[in-house]
Image (tube, rainbow, N blue to C red; front, top):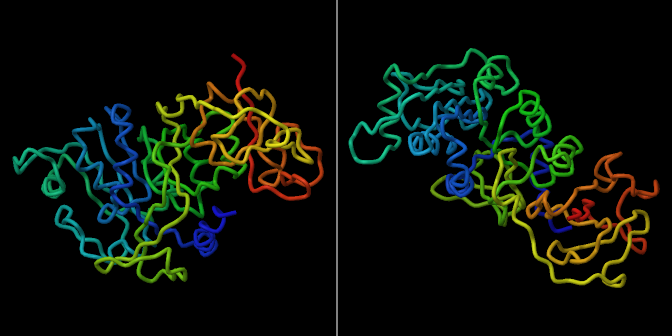
Length: 354
């Protein structure tokens, strides 16, 4: 139940529709370094990012040539409490954001204009004043669901951002509908959303690389964070940490083809069967019994180690979504139960026959 406790503040934020969690550059760099070749020649769209504040924009602008991008597009949302609230990093074609005015920036060319051997944001500042690149206020409010932003989405090959946590289901559904590749951040518990789990089961979505540890997000100073251990203020900036925030993607990774080695032998005493599911309980992923061929219930953290060449995903417990247990539920208590005790969120897997 520890994971539930770690994410309690995130759930409260979702309920209040407070979605301004700005990703740190170090977390972006640690994940995106694994996809360099997949970005080459592609149009990247960051559709939930204030170009004056977003570290996603900073990352792609500074690495435009190293990644071989064809184009970078970024758009912000008018209701962002941070957008326009601080001095911009650079002027855009002589314009400055007014209040919370949403902006669109399109980078088509990045040159080392100051000849320092590296392309940084000083170069981007100069380039945005030239015709090769576009910087304009949006006509609408910058909502990713708006007709204007969907039009930009249609131009993109890959979408990379930290979408609103409270709208995660709708956000992913839009990406799938428009057949886009993506690398996005989300709550680990989104794995159990029936709309998301269906994609995972069908191998249309999986986890990225850097899913260990706690990530700290910049938030507006006005955000109320009652738990002292989950917040900090550095140089006048407030940060909020959330338990298990993970990367979701449909770009292929080397990680998802790495098979695990197991050492445990099966015994009915150590791996009891559920009272109401035709599967055994495996409470720790690395203790999956090496010779067991039947259905097993594992924590959702299993997906960070999942290889489709090694395991088949049968389903998940009915407390996480009706009709997804893969036919092994007896129709009684929807939770996984052992000796009358409920187990927390389980996915059912089976080893692939070889």
